[in-house]
Image 1 (cartoon, rainbow, N blue to C red):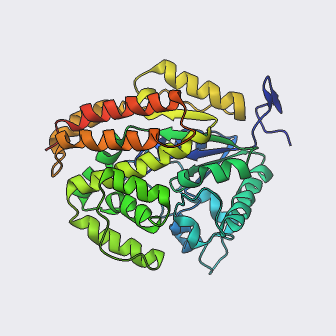
Image 2: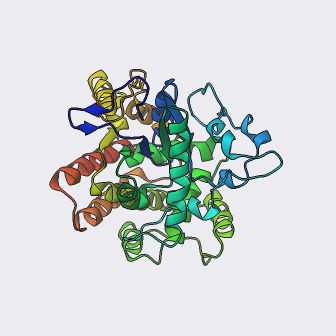
Length: 356
């Protein structure tokens, strides 16, 4: 099928049939996705693995919009507008979605739920294709499964959104401080806890010195609630260690070779970087998002430093060093990727130093 506004071929071969944005919480991924979704030639699926989709109804869709506390860009349509064809009147839940999809996984091989997840994502890809548009997915729960997804969907462009861990964590920590929203502080504890039986995850937990909630992982929902309660009073240094451990695991999974790295620390500081990202996406998917309005997220982190309370920023250098050492110790990490992550840790050292 020919996608609108593009040819079927590039100098490097056929165009990809869609785009998976593999992002982390508070990474700036929603903004990247919003710039793609704004295009008439794109169908933008927001958080296709979110557990919100298990209970979503047609009546709920219109109310799912950015709030004052989200920090998300204004959106012309509600977050989950594109899922309407997969919802039925009087029935909750997106067709094909399973609540088990909502927890990221870090095993080397796909788990028992993956075939169902693959079928579900394929149904969304086909929905976008039926609309004669390029399907673009914004994930926050896919980085651990990135190698599985890349192998299962080779016809899709896989882009990773990367932001230095200090800026990314600060965005969520300040939401907890200002609005008593513990979700983004709790999320790393939840993902690490539910995956702690995986040797790689256990290594990251130990390397970063993370203390998990003293609650054995039971059902996903029960453990998520326990982690949110834990996050309400979690010691700041431990919350940051948990975040860095998860950040390192996700960065390690990107080693397998994504088609494009979108560096959120650079895209807001350089018009050339924004133009390069636009051209790279157009070359592979045939769509041209406008990234010219990217905010300088590094400068924003620097300005917010006086508001970062309860964390000994000077002590975070050892955490950054331990996480980088953990990453470099794993097989398959290229020298180029290790250097990229080293630079992120150097920047994180600079940004956390004023935290008290």
